Image (tube, rainbow over the protein chains, first blue to last red):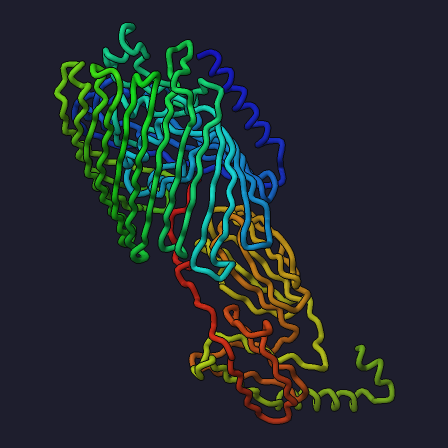
Length: 409
Length: 222
């Protein structure tokens, strides 16, 4: 913990130095605060070591989150951007979710390149397009992107080759992405033991992500793993990779394919008894703006994860489809999710099968340029075989209602 | 004053009369009517028609124009200015833009932070300046710099009228989606009375890809 604080302070100091030593360009600070009322059902949330798959499990008033985004141009073609969040729940309350330096040189040809380095998300989601990687559609994000938000982040560099279509007099634009990164070795831990969940609680840099203390996991005669994970840890000194391809038809339709492989050594284990999980998956996302006011967005993910000598091996798959319609200052969004984790490993007493589906309906209303009011209802049905270890029913149906007031600037 | 000094044989009154005659001739010049049709003979609207006096044009240092950035688009999509115009690039969005051009008529880059104003740029070379934004790859705009104060656009019937003094002109037609062999279509005309010119494009206009103009509302957060 002490070591991570030192690292954190060191990074903050470096970032502040970079920001304040350059005076040529404006510093752009923007952010958002969401607060409101929640009403939800058990089982308890994983954030409190429960087996529930919604962020909330009781009723109350809360700050949903506060985010701040700082952007500084260093040269006209180079900028530094940092995103920090505050959450009242979880292990750590304040920290960075992303920080990156981006270089996009001016190039006269039709095919161009750009690069970025830092701690960031691959751009595989078409849902998380608001400031701070939030969704402008629903508060509770899809199972796929909730998982990416909590377990996936890369510390590395990405290179992009792209051809903007309009300047080339074509309706088609494309991008090719390739990245190499460190960290993110335990990716798949929470997905396997807790299963997919639906929420907007992104993990912070150096945060510990909690989950229920399943005896088969924590027992020193079993897998002997803590009931938490630090998802962005580097455990095996190996690089991971991802590649991605975007294809856009004007600004009306978007298709994004990514293949992610952290190339982890599944036998690597550290002094905390955290394992590297070899996790790889395909992600395919699609958006079609049917009209200027209505759009559909969908994403499909298929992958697997391996830990130890097949101590844990699961295939996972998830899909969502969403429709969103804007009428004046009102936006209505509805999304359906299905998700599945299926095991095929040597420890049958460590049950990893989980499955579920969810419906989310959201209304958001812009009261003014800076204020927004919204309400959301989620119904999540999940089955997780390992709940039996904690004497809980395997199946759970959770409803969650949110009333959220947002201020953004 | 310059004119008076040169014509030192003239009395002031004679010179004044001479000037009045020139002005009258200009006021009673001719109307140039231009019609523009596509390759199938249909009228084309919003085509830029300009008439450049072959005798040359006096420069001006007080010309101003504006190319705005609104909802992550250039507004207007294309702007026609006389050579020697200072063009301001305001930023009406709440995000930064990075406007650039690699066109020979004006190469530049301009970082437009939100709420920050950059000084205007002088466009002192005739030609077509294609604009892009290095932050928003779909943004495309044009500044068409013409060496004349006489320019206008065709109406929905493909017609444009320009009041001109008598004299020799090079009349040109331009549109950003034109595919002609040369960047502009040219005709020379000697104007002594009302004259009508017809331009017919040999090739169709490029598709307008209006889908690039639709505002996605949300950015592409990365």
